Length: 203
Image 1 (cartoon, rainbow, N blue to C red):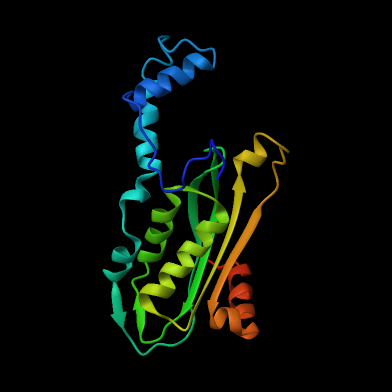
Image 2 (image 1 turned 90 degrees about the horizontal axis):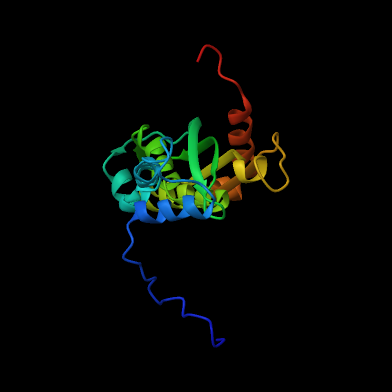
């Protein structure tokens, strides 16, 4: 390890400055006047916003799902699609947003349908990359209910690409995670991908 490299396990130290103080300093460093009318309450607002946008760190995903497990004999594909997702990328702390599609084939137990959107929100309320978010959702469902398989697809637009860098406003990123029979069976995987492409009539 190089002389200036810190061990990965070394805890990060915090300054005595409050969150609001740090935002105040950031505004000064950007060349702004933090005391002017439009910015005087900004440090407090940013603190509240960031607490909300990163609240997923304080929640337990496995406990969330275990609170709504039901024993059934149903063994066909369950799909919840077009779930809205908003998160912050960990590289620039800019938003990315889009839709998540989740499917699984039960193996004696099913989840309450509302728990899947809540699981997505829990993981998206952390600093993220889309690839990790996709696998976290799939792996948590697989671990908790042990289905025959899980499939997750996320389609998202990233403001770090749209507002800065390459500035491509119409680009989208698509990621997927396929576990169990969704990985091993081309027929199962194709059925899932075909169903999420269909637009529901009257919904």
